[in-house]
Image (cartoon, rainbow, N blue to C red; front, side):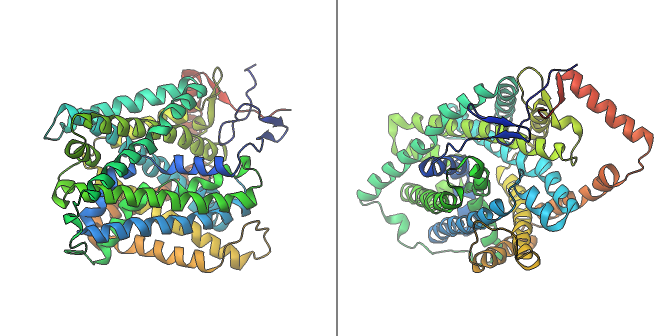
Length: 487
């Protein structure tokens, strides 16, 4: 008989958790300040070191770019408050997957899981890996861009390395995360302090005409918002801490209202520092803005900037790999993904097939050289399903008004959030139709997959046998078994 494995919940049970017959019950160990630290740690990643160029490229002016950064933070705050209501009203694992399922049924929920598995999560991981490689290699090619093949090769290596760590031992993965978390804020503090010092010396020429050349076309404003919102991505993970948060119905909205404005202030000041030191042409011609910033301002100490940014993105990629694999583990456990993805390794209790499958898809996406094309791909699809989730919130307000809602935001907030999300989904269609079209085609392609492998009860034997053989192959290859509940 295979060894009985303790159930894995999302997130993985930490030391001190309590096992019950329903699964694992986590202790309420996270206070308000801990919740704020977790939220800031999730949000601050590679985006702030990549997105300034994308925001400026589509805004075409310093003033408009700063407005986009502030607006993105405000929109993320509204969205986080709406998700706090969703998370406490529908206390299930899976985030958007669970909310869409409860509001609209299994097919839309499957489509979310489908695009999350093949686009949202691996694309975000690919962007972070490419950012790490770009910054770590930039000092070796001063004055020019590192070869794209070298960048992609190093991105592939670090993706495989971190996947191996996550497969080997959960404790190793969490230790890596703890070591590299502080470097995120430290790198930004260096940027803000250096930029403030430069600004105080009287270098204000880049702000003389802040709105000159602004691109007011709605489609380009939406694309600028895509790059800005990419830096704030992670705000919709806030409700995942509810299970371990002390007095969650009180502390969750408080943590949101503290952390999102804090991140917004940090991001805006970091961009003011960029714009104070670098001209628009310098920012647009650089794929590693923080490195260009350091080379111009820090002199002999310029090497610390790519080092700390690389450490930040390394930690962010590790955290994304760790967390995202659990989402697909939950989806497979609910029967919406192949059973093999819901298997866990006997020796170290990690969802190894899920981790390796994600690694393979991420490596495939690394062939795309332009990181901003990747951001447009992921941002459109994410905005579409975020719109669906907030639509579900409004629908449940109408259809099931008696549902218990420990946190209930004013109706105006989800309405405003829905309108802005609809704008972000609609207007890029004529500016970047290729990215939008590819995203829509991929979403629609999930329908026949759902009908064939999930909805179709009387499948041909060859399909059932092939699925069984694949699951058995993965179980033997990775030494995995299906999770079992405690008796």
